[in-house]
Image (cartoon, rainbow, N blue to C red; front, side, top):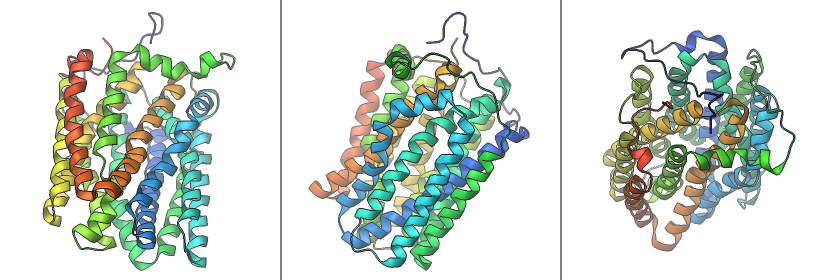
Length: 420
């Protein structure tokens, strides 16, 4: 918790319609944004290709769930290590090394595909290495952005930081579907090249300064991130709400099943389905960059988490692509509100010397909500079918929004994202 002697940064009271490109006038942030964009684009291409390749190989939705589990497990087991490293060493270098390792993983996928695959086990092993790299990349990139911009630019930078993921998540899956349609070798090769480009952008960022933790390593300093989040009910409520909403409502892992078996389509349709949430989220991110949330932040977050669950149910029940895609777009727009509120709270309330450890915990929660959510979806689909798994998950998300609104009244009543 920020002490009386370490005040938390505040969002400037700029009028509506403020300069939406303010953060990009900072060269360091521009390079950072490009690095994050290239890494996310590459990840989307690789993940879409892996999902289609594994489902074509095994025809088992359980294996699609294992894709998420392999990527989440390292973030869970390394959470105490990654956060401490990010607070003690160069965040820029950790970013560069992490994406370089992911690039090597993409090269390994090229080699495996070229020699022929009869089992998905080698792919799972590579995805586990991906998960290790992402366990470091997540908290490093989330913590670095605060060191690159001024306080006046921070809210704008956070919105654009979210947009880098959204833009890549729009183009990346569609590109992955197209590239996989040409050849899996081409898809994985493009992914490897983009990871390399991301590492180069990270390396040429002018090294920023950040307040590094000088405390001697101990169990107390290692768990500081957990302790900080637990001590702040508003932060804890925002992170845990997003965790359980996406964990229960996530449908990404089952999109290969929907594309092939429910909608009777191919890899390109899978790419469109994967891109649809980001297509809906991007306009919301651009809107928030110019018109940040300044009032009723907590209530707005709960409303849109509930809508995320409702639109998930709509997608789950759809059997035609012209309903499925709009439902996913509305899911993405709703989720963008939750992401924006959570990330802004995290950066504005967290002291810089523990930011890496707090972001490592947050990264683990994000991994739990996404990758572990994919495992949940795959497991449920194997037991009760893909459509019931998605519909039940969406209904559970609506229930979580209502329950959390009752459990965390401080978050529900929160007006501003900055600490007063």
